[in-house]
Image 1 (cartoon, helix red, strand yellow):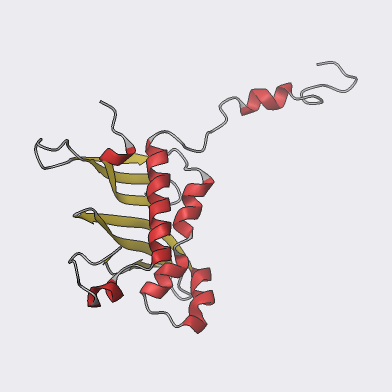
Image 2: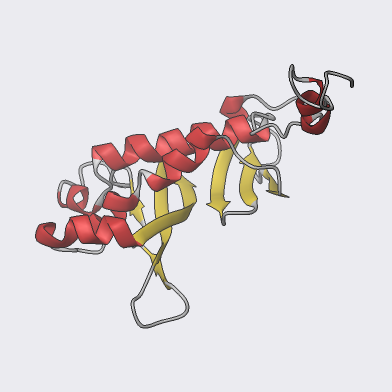
Length: 183
């Protein structure tokens, strides 16, 4: 039986510039064993541009989560590259930790940042104070876009390599001919 989008919950998305890693669980039907099946895909197939853009759209959100002063956010954005998100699911409520790399002037390696875990809404009904510890609405939308891109990737929507690029280039008009027009 093929899993539908509703059956799958993404638990991790990572793009390191060379490989995509997506972890997810497939929920079982009600009445079945309560534990979901878990899967992890690591692939060298490049993702579509919109997959990478969805991750990079979190740069400001990482700065806000790290309490970077508003006056410094533009410099922050220029030096931070979001690389992944770890998702949690409790009673249907999504939570997330964003991982990013920040370049440092006097270091060969980047600073690895993991934002604090935050849910999209309070886990407890009526927890008014808990709302201040939740993800901002705009961040939730961006995270949902990443989930959508990850599901598309799992379903095979990836950047396609051109297998016959050399043949196409040789067959293009004006290509592959010797002087004098002879092929």
